[in-house]
Image 1 (tube, rainbow, N blue to C red):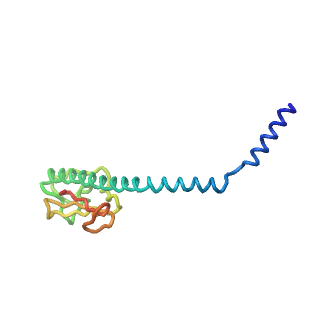
Image 2 (cartoon, rainbow, N blue to C red):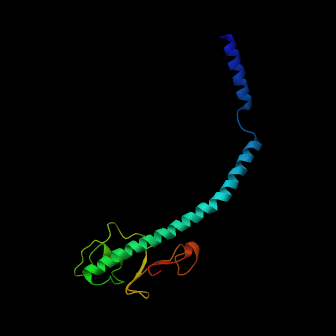
Image 3 (cartoon, rainbow, N blue to C red):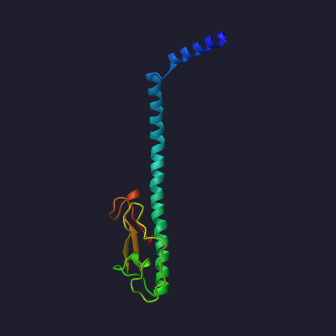
Length: 149
């Protein structure tokens, strides 16, 4: 038992001397983490941007299907003044058999409402989101996503 206590005491002394990291070890770890963030961060950000654009395209497609169902029931698309809300509440249209969306009209991935014009300049209706910058045109995440593309 005395030998055990002696070894345990020696072990605790060694641990007490070695408790913690040196400044150099911490700096090396921080440099490695910084390099990883610099290499991996842009790739992750690119995927987030791509997923928002894909989400916008999918939402526009689903809203287009709801608009087509509205037209099949009523014989027309909602007017610009009725907007996309006509897919949730009857704007007074004969034959309306909605709601055509189970949930509220979604915002675009950048938390802004979709732009809806009916009749549109590119078809029966134009449904658009203007991307991150919220203004027409742009590239990357600022690119417009439209129903006619």
